[in-house]
Length: 161
Ligand code: SME
Picture 1 (cartoon, protein in one colour):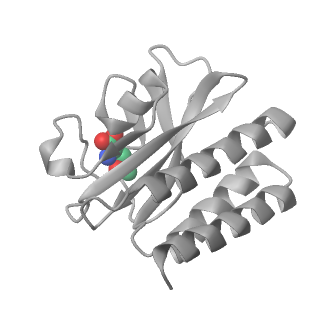
Picture 2 (tube, rainbow, N blue to C red):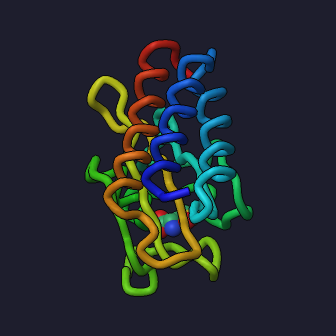
Picture 3 (tube, rainbow, N blue to C red):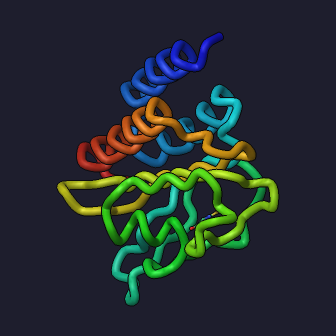
């Protein structure tokens, strides 16, 4: 199946998940599983959420699928994860070995995307995906992952965690 068709199919399945999920936590758990199963180059898929009230602000590992990571809590000044959360921008790294910010999770990881999740205009967390393939996150993948992060933000706005 061409990648564009697969992206389109997964996008539809994700929309259905968002309609069926009763809580944001439920949606995040089902979403990481679906993305990991269906998108063959998404080798680690997980959410980091800002810990409420933590000073300094801290990202904490939430729902994920893939190998356990040593980075269960990440301050905002560290990692690709910290960069995405503190800037409120999607960060795509085509070759993690060339990015000094990168915090290693697996030796096999070659590229990474991190997309912030917003609730009422504020960053509350992010969706982080690692790939064993270099430059895996082309524009159509970015669009899909941003769509996923948006749906989680909307679900959090609608019904909280
Ligand atoms: N690579 C991330 C850390 C999280 S692990 O990939 C799961 C980073 O640089 O922030």
